[in-house]
Each structure stands twice: as C-alpha cells, then as structure tokens.
Amino acid sequence: MLIDIVFQDRRSRLAARHPQPERSYPACVSNIVVMKFGGTSVADADRIKRAARRIVERREGGANVVAVLSARGKTTDELIAMAQEVSAAPDPREMDMLLSTGERISCALCAMAIRDLGHRAISLTGSQAGIVTDSWHTSARIIEVRADRVKEALEEDHIVLVAGFQGVSTVTQDVTTLGRGGSDTTAVAVAAELGAEVCEIYTDVPGVFSADPRVVPDARKLDAVTYEEMLEMSSSGAGVLQLRSVEYARNHGVRIHCRSSFDDRPGTLVVSEGENMDPAERPIVSAVTHSTSEAIVKLVDVRHRPGMAARIFTALAEAGVEVDMIDQGPPTGELAQIAITIPRDRMRDARAALDPLTGEVFAELVPDENVGKVSIVGAGMRTYPGVAAKMFNVLAAEGLNLDMITTSPIRISSVIPRERVESVVRALHAAFELSGPDTIRVEETFERQGVE
Ligand code: ASP
Ligand code: MG
Image: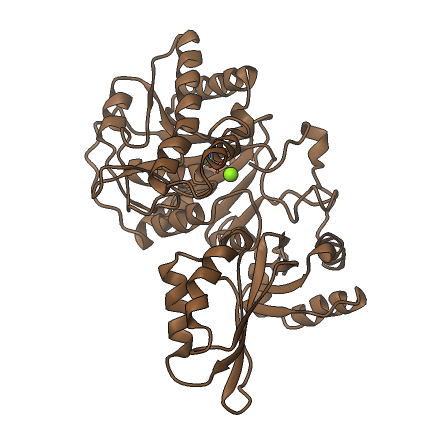
C-alpha cells in the first residue's frame, strides 16, 4: 500500500536525520502501532466498543497495539466547569488531579470492552505508563517516556491503553496534564519511545482539511502535509493536532497518520518535505486556517531604550503567557508602539504581568479582544512570488483594515475583526482554488461533532 511504501522510505531517511538510541526489545515486540482516539471517538458506550473493535482488528492483523485515549466527549470541559463552580481560581495541582480522571475513565472502559472481545488488555495512567513531565501544572511538557511497563505488557501480549493528556513530575511526584488537546502529544511521545511504525490519530474528521469544513463546506481533505506546514497550521488555528505533538513528531521522526475513526479511508499523512509529494503537483498554498481565540495587547508609548522589550517579554514569559505575533514599527522620537497577540483567555494573566510596568516601560496597556486571525499556509509559497499580493487583494476586496500582519517563509497571517473571519476564510479558500475534484464532504461520512 502506498502509505506503507512511503513510511518505509521515510523511516530510513528519518533514521539518518534523527538517530535514535539503540533499543533492546525482544523480537516479539516489533511492529508496534500507536492508535490515538479523540474524545468524540469514545464519547459513548457504542463508540468505545467501536474503538475497541478497531483496536482488536489491528491486533489481529499482527500489530502490537498501544492505544492512547482522550476523555469522553465533553468530559474535560465538564470537569473544568465543576472546578469553576467551587473555586474562582482553582489550584493548578488539584486541577490536574481532577482533569486527569477523564482519560482514565476512557481507558478503563475500553480495556473492559477489549477483554470481552477475547483479547488481553490493560489500562495505564500516564504516570504508570512512564510519561515524565516538567512540573508546569495544566500545561506540562513531556521530558521523557519510561516505557518499561508498557513494553512488559506488550511482551505479555496485552493491548495497552494509555491515558492521554497526563503525566507525572518526577520532581514533585505530582500528576500533571499537558494542555488542551494533549493526548495527541502523549500518543506521539509513546510512539517515539517505542519506535512505532506509525502514530495513527483517529478523530472525528477524515483528516487534515484545506480549511475548517464547518466554515468552508467544500474544503478538501489533504492527502499529505509536511511537518512544517502542519506546525504552521496547528499554531494558526487548525484544531486537528495539538501543536506540541507535531513538534515532537518532527523532532523524533514519528510518522503521523491523521484519519477518521468512523471509516477505513486513508486520511492525511504528516511527512517530511519532498516525500510523497511531487513538487510539481504540490499546491503553492495548501490551507487557509483561522482562529478566533486571540486578543491583541497594545502597549502605547513604549520608551525607546535598550531593555524595554526584554522586560515586557520576560514578564509575559514568567506568567507563562504564550505570545504569538509581535509588532513594533519604527519609533517616533523617544517612543515606540508595540502590539502583541496572545490567547484571549490569558488576557487576565497578561495584564497582571504587565500592569506593574505601566509608567516605567510604557504609558498604557490597551486590550483588543474583538479580533481574529486568518492565515494561508503552504510549503510551495517559499518559491513563488505574488502570494502575499493575492492574499491582500482578497482582503482589500473584503474592505478590511488589517490590524496586524506576520509571515513565516510558508505562512502569511493577518489579524482582522473577529466577525469577519469566516467570510474571509471562504474568500481566501476560493481565491487560491483550494477545493478540488476529490473534495470529501464531511457530512457525507458522518454527523460532525466538532473538532476534538
Ligand atoms: N481531554 C483533553 C482535552 O479535551 C485532552 C485531549 O483530548 O487531547 O483537551
Ligand atoms: Mg484534539
């Protein structure tokens, strides 16, 4: 099958680029496949049983299966709401104790269902599975995977269910969680440590699309995207894979196959540049992404002195506020204007971090929460002139003032008023002719539940 050929080819190239330490697994534990199921794919008893059957099919096909599961349906949102009912600012350590339960429920239930299908299965918490993280509660990073227990269980012919989205800090011995969408990163990290053939991300959409199909009905499923494109897409709003999982996959050479849990069709491969893609056929622009979860922090009249930006960004970093775009024009006299985009739900933390600098570093902090971001992403953009011109012509035709613009070699993003985001995404998707003859309509395959 095409995918297998591509993967074999990729394996040797990636092994050369990312040499892995020698592994000493017994011969019986090769051919490992990691299958990750998102929340919608395990939302109720029928779906858990369906996931269990899918896992068992893979096992009966000869693979050693480690399955990483998300919390069921809206469980994580409900747990967050429960915390907010009892506390205005829930303690982060206790938040992680609470949130990590959702994934454990899914894994225990799925293990039961697999056992009923006549296979050996064992569920493990993130901690039991050896997911070691830093101590940054609610958004911890995986430092290491100590997979001895997983390997032993595989050797004993178990299907191993690993609770996604969580780990343990070996410094504090406390349970941590990895940030929203973190089960993707659990799956990739486990796949990297086990040298898995592939990390399959089973989700409620058939793969990665040229735009969010809820916004653009004729968005096209992409057969393959490069790690770099996927990184840009994840960081600019595509919800299908957690950004950190893509970073981890690229750094460790993990093959990702993002596909539907509701049918057998191949989904989207995340590949290295040049693989599985004929450069002549590669589109200049692969996707239009958008995000409505950002806000702008405008810092008015920043003193034009060495060290001012350092103080601003150190304060934000210490508060753990992730900064996306940064804009500063040439200063006028002694003063400069800086604008920064951050996740909107971090505005309170950003203000708390920056308010003490008012007067000394800048004159005033002006938040703008009524913004959104549209981006175009494509590895082919690097070598084609005129892409920016086309994008800005589309935005001009929409009559928009652009609040901020940033670029990378393969992405152009613009901040615009939030209420215009969806129509602009549709206009850009049409202008770059991204829908194609092989468009898969999401509603053809199943009833959509929202990106996991
Ligand atoms: N359950 C967690 C969330 O909703 C993690 C995940 O699903 O990946 O964010
Ligand atoms: Mg997800």
